[in-house]
Image 1 (cartoon, rainbow, N blue to C red):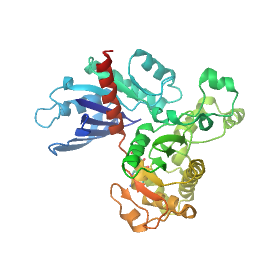
Image 2: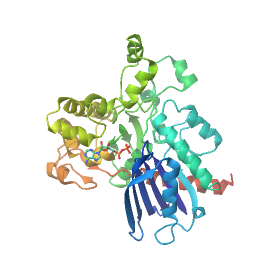
Image 3: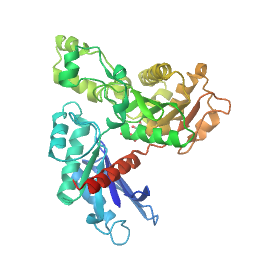
Image 4: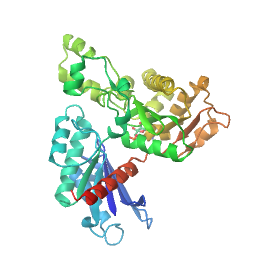
Length: 400
Ligand code: ADP
């Protein structure tokens, strides 16, 4: 069965067409800078190796990006599907919807629940809603499945989820810690179970969005993400953890609620502290040239990751494996080294050369390290493809 996975970022689109249940990727594509005249488009047919890369493209909308990919996916010479109707399901790595915390067919009530939470996930739910609508227009008879990022975290015990707020807010409004990056961490959990049955794992997904997750016996046990995606460790341009009373304080100082929310969600994180940019590569380059704010941004970022690793180490009662993933986790040897060196007292010994030379994924801990340290390339699409396939099979079985 052919299952297409669409991973929709705030400015990017990634696609993978799978043959399931073999987990085989037939073709894949990514479009960066959606909404601009300078978009970058890459497409590869993984069976034949045929590929194309185009820069400076005009891709004004998500709809335009989706059509661009579907044209190549169904092309006679380099496509991987005979037609769009050969695809039996489209899976989305959806973020959050009020009252939905699992895997669902994207019918009207689920879409409404995503719209109900637009104001706490504007950068994520808005592009997903556009992409889902476009796929519906093009493929009206195909199942659309949302694998919500919060689903993997449903196993987090209530004592880790609960904020110490009036209980009725939890009951009435479901205000509690949620956890995101579920597709990424469920893949790490599966890999860790298959590859040595590690019982106590801490995953660090560090990219444009960043979070740390405690994984116990293959299940999520705690997450640095709280109720919204604005929480946890600092992100590219979102603030991460702050104090709720910052908002009334700044309003009292004369800022409007909109200005404060815009500052926290668009001008915070690495960008906010460094003043240089929201991409760690720019911040690292500026710090290397002596920019003190850039250095401070990196220091705050590392301390925040360590704070969560420390908490989760205690909650798990030890640690078998530390995993890095995401754009920063996979590519910044510097950040990995800073984190691992600060953890030598829990028995982590970094293989400095392996860390520096790493291409792709692999182990970077030294032979005598009490805790294994591994870099795993994020594979969020595979988890979504598996869930989508299972959802379609369940539907077929029950006839619903
Ligand atoms: P997203 O969370 O949006 O999916 P990614 O996981 O692709 O993002 O991570 C993107 C981020 O990874 C970039 O913004 C940049 O900060 C970081 N990054 C990518 N490559 C490198 C690198 N070679 N060195 C340091 N940071 C990098």
